[in-house]
Length: 117
Length: 113
Image 1 (cartoon, rainbow over the protein chains, first blue to last red):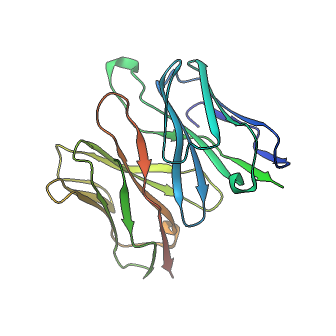
Image 2 (image 1 turned 90 degrees about the vertical axis):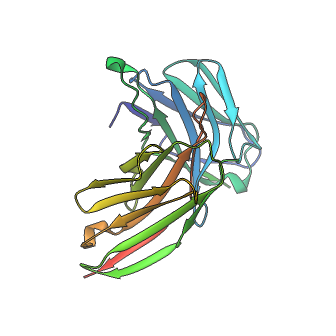
């Protein structure tokens, strides 16, 4: 499973409440990503990180913030959840520099199903 | 930007036929083009990828072709089987050192027995 874990796996929350999703990796991969998956929209990039404390926006970043204070963890926060943020959220990691080779394959977590009511 | 258009959105084929999914992009700096397969209720997984210095790559029944001049790349699945039924996503990177990875909207492939 490439050592990537998302938590929680399922969450139901109320509109207006803050929510934080966690992505944890044990692979020492440099890049980490948050996507949301909705029918008809595929995988849309929310935010990504290219190193500790280095993050940038993706296609659908409004209403979301991220933090990466250490290599292993990439947190996605919905400051004030809205019903439009009901979705399945996937974290992904890529680029291991182990053994001197650059491996760009992205590995996905199991996903988090978030429902905002 | 790094927009990638994927077509078709759905594809239905008979078992044994071939399936082709095409993606077009606009950023000429992109140099890495992966394809992911996502089975129902599961996470996307890489099935094949290609770099910009290569025109074609094969892995058994799966192949990817890249035309950098025209800015499109395609996934080819030959001798399709029911277990090939899934959603397929094309992806591309942004080039440069920050490696922004974006995906098309996906193609739902159904292989009918």
